[in-house]
Image (cartoon, rainbow, N blue to C red; front, side, top):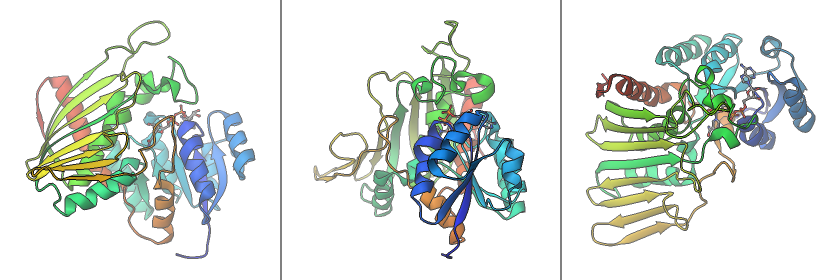
Length: 348
Ligand SMILES: NC(=O)c1ccc[n+]([C@@H]2O[C@H](COP(=O)([O-])OP(=O)(O)OC[C@H]3O[C@@H](n4cnc5c(N)ncnc54)[C@H](O)[C@@H]3O)[C@@H](O)[C@H]2O)c1
């Protein structure tokens, strides 16, 4: 690590920027927060006043500032690819929010541009760094539950309309033009990426059903994107698994994963007391009491900002380098295609 500080710009100053990116950069002693841009000038100025640096009046002017080494892209899904590519072309390292992009071609174009520009591209798949997931990966590598045969993983809560910095039924999360897809992009991508990361695998077959069951816009019409997405995946290892993503789990969030192996079961974030519970065939139990995963209401440091900064300063590949996230995006788009065609989709 060099003594030089990394100068950072924030593009999109909404909820995720305000709750994770900006405070986590501000805590990192190797970072100087230099600039902010948002469609809402007021939002960018408020962040500049609170954390230092200045508000820019266009993305072009922020990207033209040679002092800025790296940017976080924290805007609605539809602009991820365009702004990431623009920032890479301007010579910036990029930490882009998930879902990586709204088409597979865009995901691939982002990776190509990062290679061409010789800059880092990291996607904020923060589930990979959640404490229990870090430990679970080690336990799986140590064969604690034997060979994994199946899994079920879930991410569900009451919906993003109370989360966004512009809350309510008109949130961009419900707008097909800005979000493109709903629960599968907001939550499903997190859990699918996590499973492929934990199991070091890729998907060979995907079958998904997307539905809009309950969420309505301000006119009382069902929204244009899915509020529930249920998927079955087959991995190259033969493992079978289900991923449930839902915006209609009213009352309590579910962020749990259960893996079933030849020697026993591993439950992650499934018990309020123990973040990991291992239950072996011989009835032996191993419990791990750790912090619970961050929820919309309870934010803890994601560790992803420190990881991004360190990967740049130490010139190493980050834990969720764009290339490694492509795996989950390919399978997500295959699932979406399967929903459209009503049949299972094979992935080469
Ligand atoms: N990694 C995670 O766990 C996680 C959690 C929540 C949201 N997200 C992702 O973060 C992104 C932002 O979500 P959010 O919850 O902060 O939404 P938000 O509605 O709270 O904020 C979005 C902000 O971006 C601004 N904006 C939108 N398009 C812009 C553009 N092209 N240029 C400049 N500003 C623009 C808006 O004015 C708003 O201030 C989304 O892609 C979302 O999926 C990730």
